Picture 1 (cartoon, rainbow, N blue to C red):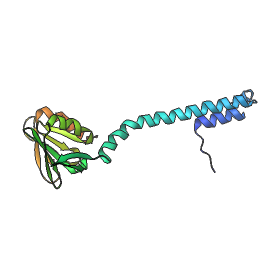
Picture 2: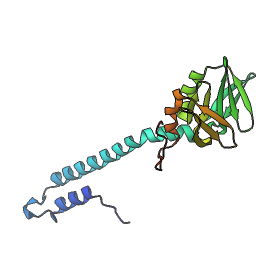
Picture 3: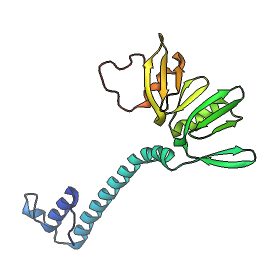
Picture 4: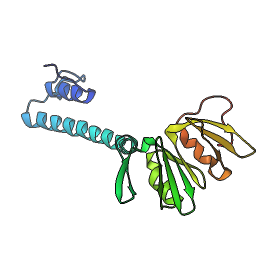
Length: 185
């Protein structure tokens, strides 16, 4: 079995065995000293691993919402489970909202602001006071009128992005390339 040495464990081994680091008088001849070196090495390696895991937790939380989660909705006394990626849009109609899925339409009694807050972790962006869109279904954005944009979903459905919500368009992509990116976004 081949062991893998990190730079830290390699230097600790060299000190413990007296094989590196220049000064040969730095050899450890007593077992307690060698144990301390190995203990420090283990703690440093373990704390580096914990720090690395802690750095990845927020990223893991974000991706877990978009990959494995489901949305439960109450429809006529039954509870239906929807995959968030199947929901294209949420459109407000008075005191109700319409969840438009690929194959169905669901009417729920909920406010747009509550829906926006609940669905934001699942990749939904508010583009109008009465429209939320799923980022994964957005195909194109183009200038429409001064201060307004037209957003097109896969399948051709188009929505107007109003001035109030145009700053939300930045969240549609992590990287924007090209010389003529939207200045107003």
